[in-house]
Length: 112
Image 1 (cartoon, rainbow, N blue to C red):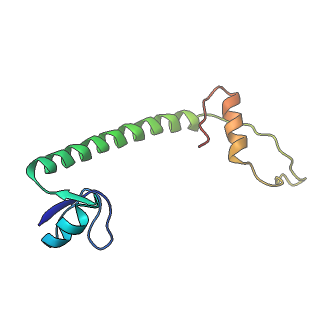
Image 2: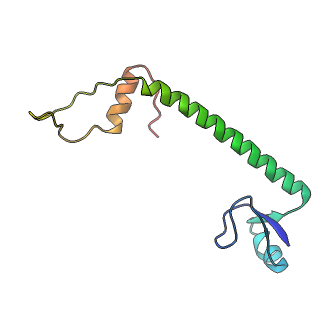
Image 3: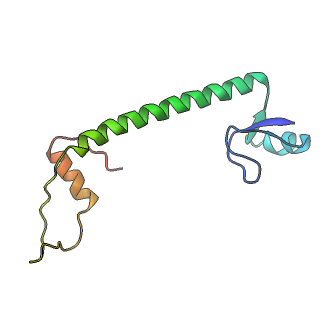
């Protein structure tokens, strides 16, 4: 019996993989629990379309992130902190301090 996995299953495959399983395992365990669907032609087309759309969204998100990284890469931030006589700072510059410095320069930062 051929099924399409809807989630990762250890020892069987990953999400959206088409695998062959014994009919009893597929009918009595995987399908009733929502872990898999029968690999019909329409389901295969649906899964391939979902994969294509997910890849498109990931590509768009990557492109947006690269644009933001390019803008931030050109910035120079000046964060004041205490330092010793040798120029070595006490403690560390935290992500919160960097986010505040970016916000002060007019850039929106989501700290999640």
